[in-house]
Length: 431
Image (cartoon, rainbow, N blue to C red; front, side, top):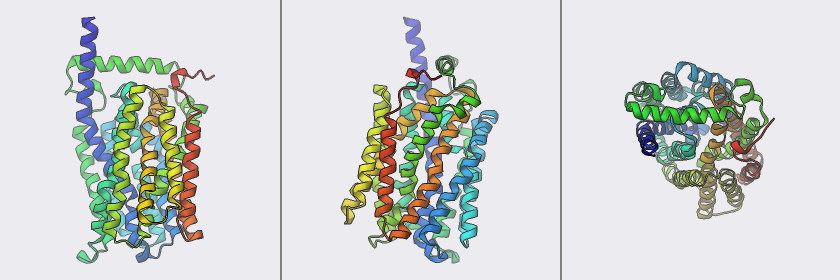
């Protein structure tokens, strides 16, 4: 009994140290990552007029990022497993930071498409790499809250990035550059700096963590090894199974519907709010409101999912809420009701992410985890191309955002219904 208590104490101590050491840096990195990915939505407030981009051109350019991202995502995650998370994550961050700064040199449709595609290639593998990296450090029972805390960086990126982007657009004319030029340069540079810092902060696995005691390392390694052996019994540990089994593909389809909402509104929310005739700084502050509530909801909802051990309803309910709220926002009229509807929608689809990612990480291990997590994320991020493009086409065709918001409502409602078809991976007996 005393030995078990001691083992539990050492495990808890190791997890606590890993949390304080790794999570703040990963959150900061993902905040910068998401900001560099979607700040084109703020740049569009001036860039589209300067370069003569139609809504369809902008939507296609915003979404083409994901073609490069998807193409290189699985190879990137396999490279992370081979070369180590520390080196590979640093490489990704430095690469995307340089390209993000280079967005300031866009001069027309062709260069816009090329730079967005190159940004996707440079960034490929960062998010699924971090999800895989978290499985190296945190047991399954606390993974939803860890993923939720990590992914709370996404709404926080807009909470802080919205006002920042609005302010940077006000630098129009400084040193002969447009405000959107400064936006890309100033918001891209931190990724390069953090990439070099990652080489010092990150540790590949508990084996090489000199900031853990020997007892803490052994307790954490035993816990993770026991879970990995249990997971192997599900038959998803090898590359072929991870890429072909129906349950993994179904998770990818569900994630596609979730990401449709994420990027469908992420790239366009500044313009939805801007339709009320507001200045860029005000748009930036108003855009931050839905994401602030979303960040809080993500952490609390992920913690509740871990505490209860329940996943599918913790995914389905917020997605259904988001679908209903997007439908309301299509007809809400004045600014205040529209902001309330957008806040509920954003809160809903973000809250589902933590519980969702506890499913593939509980199902996959070994090489299967590296490939399977990347596959699920790749399938989902195909919606990063489709969502913004469809929103742009609907906006250009109808002259308003109502049809586009209804499209997002349907996608998220379908995702909520699909989530109810899933069970805990350990309860599944798949041939």
